[in-house]
Amino acid sequence: MRKFLLFLSLIVSMVCKAQTKQELLAVGTMAPDFTVTDSVTGKKLFSLSELRTQVTADGKVKAGVWVVLDFWASWCPDCRKDMPTVKKIDEKYGKKIKLIGVSFDTDKAKMNGYLSANQYSWLQYSEFKKWKETQISKDYHISWIPTSYLIDPEGKIAFSTLNAEEMLEKLDSLKAEL
Image (cartoon, rainbow, N blue to C red; front, side):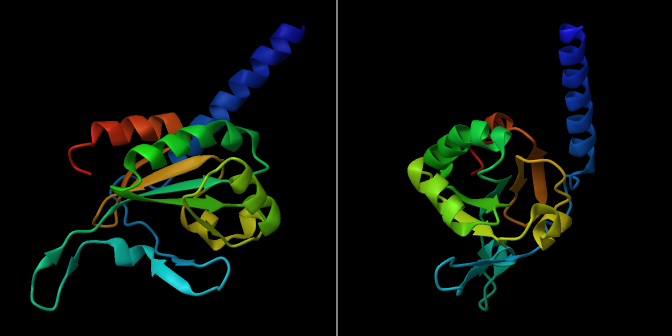
């Protein structure tokens, strides 16, 4: 009976993840814009749209950057399991892409303590509200964490996943383009 219940819970989990994956923004969709602020001063650092391909005043095309948005929370066991892989992404591609952690923590001190204790130093964004109350979770259709999006230099969704290892594999496949 125990084995059956364990098997059943595994199947339900897999079905939920599959449904969640289907609900994510489609490849080719323009990524919703948001503004990243300094968590200490509250000053604007940049908006996502500012990282896109731009045409300068003299008509030259300024290449945009690839962006990885990693949605997570310090209280989430699956997120904690994925974070070492996200750190690998930062170490391997951090100079070629913009990696932005999007935390659903409500307690800034707990989030920062977790990041510091594990030496996770990439840029973090948080509204410090409950997950389902955040605008970014609504804009990006987040119903499961961890979730990651890869955004191309033009600002369009290039890839989405519920697994950091899959994101790393996708970046490895795009290595020449990054």
